[in-house]
Image (cartoon, rainbow, N blue to C red; front, side, top):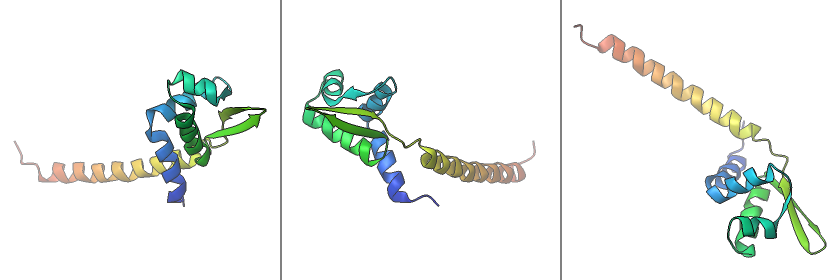
Length: 110
């Protein structure tokens, strides 16, 4: 069973287009918070907040080297989230199939 707190953190992290952009950027390799802030035209404080949410969801890891904090993709491969979406999709599809069968049975003959 998926823990909803884990899902909440993940979906909250993915809900923001800037955070999705950060993940896309980090697919190419590590980047400093300064570089990320410049790329997304925001303050260091704003970028640190975005990175913190991504870290809490396990999607990003950061490490300080000297005075610079570098970010890289984290270890969360989104398996839990994909499983939840897949299970939810199955339930919705079953309901739609039942609705279609019901409508076929109740549709007036032409």
